[in-house]
Structure formats: structure tokens, C-alpha cells
Image 1 (tube, helix red, strand yellow):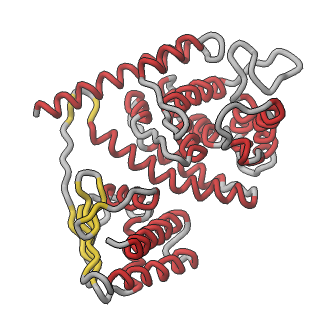
Image 2: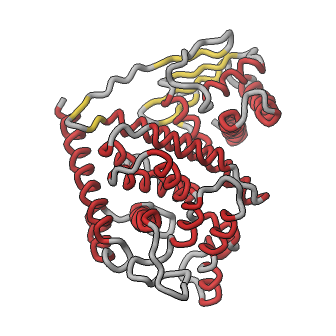
Image 3: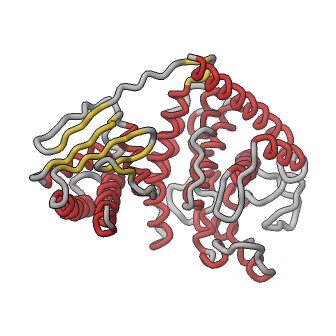
Length: 387
């Protein structure tokens, strides 16, 4: 595949997946979705001038186009996840494809299309489905890990759209945030299942986006472990999603700086909890718990941290959980300038921080379940190899 063809292919995939994300947020009839589909059709026709058919296959977790692996990027990952979620292992687009067929394909790839809905061929678009049977081992099934990972990836796309809107015009779609949190909550059937949240945690370059969804999953897992249900559980998830919203008021040069911040930069960075709390306080529909958590999430269990208060301050339970989730995610997430740590290394560090930075009892409970989950997954994988 030459450079021009590769560029056209990547553009087609990006237009297709962006249209699917917009369809998930709005509807297939939305003008933005229609515009993206028209552009995608142009690229598809260009590629069909080079190939009799456009054939995509999912093989061993890779996207293959006309028998060649496609270079991986965010758009390709989105398409791959959408196909896997629908159980599609083969997608073929033939010459003469209509705009309406491509719009239907976008609808299929969007979150609005449930797994229970039938995947049907059209005149110029054909699908091949694979039936995956997951084998139970002990109390944890690998299928449960896969299902939650797919949900988390889909909701990440939605959150990226919401956060981009916040960054550009400072308007928060609290309804969209609420929908994301409820989708996570609905995927948990028990306290043990709640800690499956750790399975799909991502480590992509979009750290601001993934970090927020990671903290949401981890906070919900902790809350379920404590027996929290109902509206309070939803508020805890929303608070986690929005805990770092104050960073949108901080210069990207400071947020993205590699290495230590100087004194002036650090002083600016320490303003983000107050800025976030003030923003959320003035945003209709935001739970009060989200305002409190945004303000407190960098305070420490021993009273240190920031922002400083004039009198002794009793933190909210959600803020304690957020600090634990934040610490865990920061250590297990790989970024280009620092390596992620092993579970044993993370456990050792968090135990040392318990009682100073972190709430000790909550930390011990978090680590105990984390280690049980790790052992269960290892047992499941071993049983899978034997079978």
C-alpha cells in the first residue's frame, strides 16, 4: 500500500468512527453525522477506484485491510473495538455503495446499536460474524472483563466529545456525564464484579480523558465494596469524572510539561482544585458531591496537600476514595515519559502512603480486593491454557 492509499484509508476510518461517535451522542439524522458520512463516502469511492472491494478483517486483535495490517492509531482502535463489540470479524464494502448504506453502517458502529440488535447485510455492505463462547473459571469469567472493557472504551469516546466541548466553550453536558456513569453502574452485578473495573483501565496518550474515566471506574468499585448503592453511587461516579475539571483553566504548556514544574508553574497548578470547584458550583445540575471532590481531591489524609484551609478540615469519603484511585491509576498508567509499575510495586508504595497521603482502612480494603482479583485472573488464564 503506497503512502497516498494509506492516507486515504486512514481518513476514511477516521471519518467513519467520528461519525459513529457523533451518532452515539446525538442521532444519525444530526447534520454533523450526515456531513461526516458524505466525506467518508468520498474516500470510500476513492479507495474503490483502487480496489474492487474494501475488505476489512479482524485477526488476532489486529485490523487487516486487503490482507495487510492497518497502522494503529486512535481511529483504528475505535473501529476495531466497535467491530469486536458487535462480533463482526469481516466487513466488505463493494463498489456502488450508497450514502444510505454507509449511514446505516455508522449506526451499527455507534453506541445506539445494542449487541442484541441483528447485524444485517445491505446490497453493497456485507458482514461476517464470529460467535465467541467464553469459558467460566472460578468466580470470574474472561467474558466479563471483555464486556466491561468494551463499555469503558465506548464511554471514553463519549467523554472525549463532552470534554472537548467543555474546553472550547466551558459548557458542561451533565446529562451526558450522568449517562456514562450509569452505563458503568449497570455493568456491575455484584461487589466482586465491581472490581472488574480495573481490567479495562487504559493507558493511551489521551491521559486527561482516560484518567477521568479510570478514576470513575475505580471509585465506583470502591463504593460498591462499601455497599453504597442508588443515587449516592451515581453522584460518586459523576464526582470522579469531574474531579480534574479545573485543569481546563490551566495552560496546556504547564499541564503537558515533562519534568518538574518551577515554583511559579507549581503555584498555578495548585489552583486547579479551587477553579474546578468554582466552575462546578456555578454549573446547573452538578451534584454538590462533585464540587466538594473537585475541591478536596489533592488534600491528604494527614491534613497536608492543597488547597490549604484556615481551620481543620474533615474530608468527604468520596475525596478519600478519589485519592486512592488517583494514586493507583498514576502508577499503573504508562505514559511516554514514565514507565508503569507492577502490581507488587504499586502495592508497596500505596501501603507506605496509607495513613499519610491515603486513608489507611480504605487503602487496605482496596489492595486486598485488587490482589484477589489479580490471583483470580491468573487462575482463569492458566485454566484457559490447560483447556
